[in-house]
Image (cartoon, rainbow, N blue to C red; front, side, top):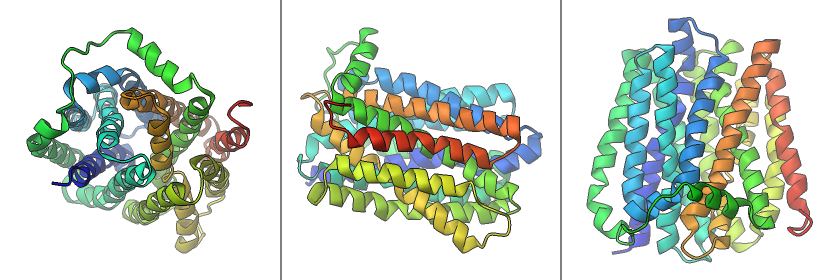
Length: 391
């Protein structure tokens, strides 16, 4: 049996469900705002709470993955997300807050899947393998954009959340037959220590190349979180229907699927991961800033073109960066390295939606936030152009 293909397939579906569940609240947010009469700026707070919980989870997950196994922790991620989004269906602000924190447990999915694929993939093809696996994220986002408005119209926003929560739990159970093989490397003698947090962060920033990747992860993931959180709300604000905005989000997100594979292939065959990420950094800044110029009378094709430029860059870097992190990681430390690096990504996902929501609450302008949040990508592009020793 080709265990690499089975590992890749199972982790692909797992991360598709994770992405679907994480993005769903942002997609159906306009319906929630209308029903509960709450301020749209609170959406940024919800996403930031999830990212704060995810930051803690990813920083300390390395020992748990080694002790219990990557597949078991992947199942836990699915159940945690399921419980979190189900709690949001209650509708109170307190339950939304708890929902965001519990859903943060889904952050285990990426370091767990990175650990698993690192066992079965050769170093040469890691960028391609990781990029294929990471196409699950835009695939889940695409499904959220298409199914979220449909489910909301069919059974209401509460029903949409509960339906997706149930699907996540069912798939977690379906993964169980793979546990024996994929968790065969678990070490039950491994213990969690508070010093693991320090060690994980140390691995992510101890060397110049790792430090640059962590800074890039901060900026890139922050941009993705900000755009995912507010794009549909922004389009509805400009006068588009929730269904139309959801479809446009899905169509644009679909570009990230071949985009991730393309960047992974180019990074495996023709360009260094570093030079490719420099190009992506500057392209992200340009496309995100261009989003701020949308007008209500812009043709849908023009809006879709700019949004596709965003998703081809902001949504498509993950496989290249994660494969490079695993390549540079000390032997047996892939989960800890990716967890530490992704904790910087979660810090970006925590801060950028908060920055955007603060700008929105103070200026009542959706535009300015896109301009401001594009700046870190420029900084990363400049930093990556310098040599690791200089940086």
